[in-house]
Image (cartoon, rainbow, N blue to C red):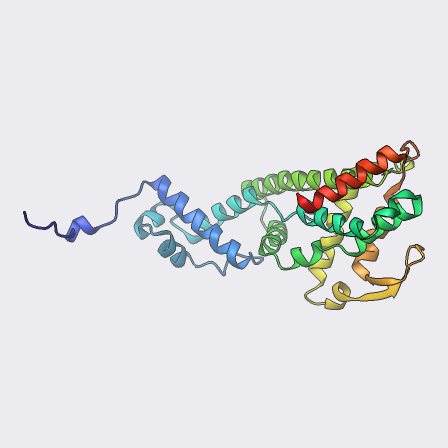
Length: 282
């Protein structure tokens, strides 16, 4: 029986995709390109021809779906806004591990109000989120989406992008607020009742602080890298403080105070120590 020959001619042509499959491949491929390089304030760095090539779709099908390049970029902008999910400042895994390491060095500090305050401040001093976020193309894209949105003309596209970014921002702030509330309560802190506010407000200010630093750092790198040898919060310990961490701690201490309802007996101390050490193994 003769061996089967590889298909030739029409048999070699790739299977024709539906218009919906073409659309999905094009948008997914373009999003992948943006995620690799980060979005600029425009989409001019994205070549439609490169997207067509990498998506492996027919050029004629693309131009049937999007007769003009701007129409494709409008759909891409909508898609990016819907998928926007910035890297979490106050990321749980990173900060839980950091917190456990700090506590392991000085678990005995949990026994006094001054010690607990020092532990909380040490968490702010050693924060790692800025450097993680600073290297993140995901965050560059997210910030650029906000800047791009501001330049959109009034209309349906602007409304859709605003709605998607608002929803993303709400979820992001909620995650930060939940983490800050858990860490605060762990050390026996609460929001100052006189402020009449919520952890979501604190989370929004923490997020704004990081974004401001990120936006300024390319042209004013000293503001992100500057540090000082000091005891800015009167703990009795002089240490190397990044200036950005001083600002972060200042925001936190404006909102937080020790909770007088928390009783630091042996049972609570043991429970907190157990939770802190569990972060190292978790």
